Each structure stands twice: as C-alpha cells, then as structure tokens.
Image (cartoon, rainbow, N blue to C red; front, top):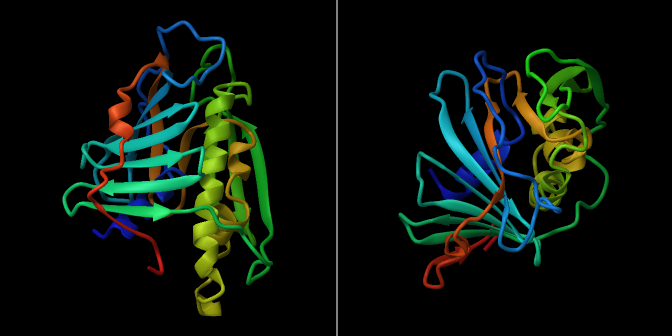
Length: 250
C-alpha cells in the first residue's frame, strides 16, 4: 500500500464507519483537568475499526494534546500520522520505506464541480448508554438524496477541545482533496465524497464527537475507550530527519 493510499484510508476510516453490536464499555477513571489539552498531557481515544466490508476489525489509537494530533493502529504500530497544529501540517510516517508523506494547508477554492444538497437528520439513539451523563444522538447525512454517512455523537460539551482539533485537521485534508477535484472527469464526481471530504469536512463534528460512525460501503469505526490527562512520550512525535519527504505533485 502506498503512503498516499495509506493516509487516505486512515483519514477516511475516521469519517466513514459502520455500527456493530456489542460496543465495549468505555469511560475514564481519570479526574478531568481544568483544560482537556495541555502541552504535556491530553486525551487518548481507542477505537475498533475496519476499512471495508468483509475485512477484519483492528484497534487504533488517537492521541490529542494542545499541539498535536497523533494516530496509529495495530497493523503497523510503529508507523504514525501526526498533525502539527502550529503549522497546520500533516505528516504520515512509514518506517518500512523511510518516507514521510506531507500535507500542507491549502484553501478550498471555488464552487463544487457539481451541485451538492447536503442534508442532516437526527433522532435520539439508544445504541450507546449515557457517557458522563450525556445522551447520544444519531445523525444521518445525505447528499443529493443518497445516504452518505451516519454518526452517533454525544452532546457538544463532550471533549470539545478534541473536536476543535479534529475540525482543524479535517480542514487541512479538505484542502488536499480539493487540489485535485477540478482536474477529475465530471462523471467521476461523487456528491457524498465531495460533501464529506471537501466542501463540508467538519459539519458532522458540529454536533459533537462521534462515538460510532459508518457508511453504506461497510467502513466502520466505534470508540472503545477514552482516557483524560494522558501523558504520551513526546519522542513518538518526532519526524525522522533522514526520511524522504514528499507531497502530491512533487
């Protein structure tokens, strides 16, 4: 799998996921800090996910502090994706071939190449019990009448600082996707993909942090656990200086 394919699968699996029964117990035994995110502590979230229907589930982790978003999974535990908030840049590090795929921030310019009618509907969800006293809601997103994406989220007050970082991260990804949109043949454009990944990349986060997410293609992800006041070794965020850095178009 190429670095570009890998980062897209990591990114997309965070946005398009499917409900599975038997969600594991989640919660935290930590006492919340005054702020969710600091320079030397943050929030660690553990997920179970799969990339497509018929493939096995795997565990992934996402750590967020004041300066960084860090993602890795058990399939390649030494590889990682890092979002640096200070320069709004994403780095995907692959140790096997000593490469770093770099995504720098770009504006999403111009109108969508096709008309997109992106609509959200909601209903109370009983699939997830209350977490820290918060009630879950099921949101369904459609584009041009086609079902795109479902998410079960808690109230907006749950891990608000984490959600803010995820919004920044997804906006950078949207700029990367947008850079190739208008060069694609018109008959290849998909309204759901354009809405979720380019023109409305953080709309699904405006209602709160997703606990479960899914799409109609079999992608899935659900939160297993979260830990507050978590301290991670900052050495894990270091980008190897001797690795080959590249970006799309370079």
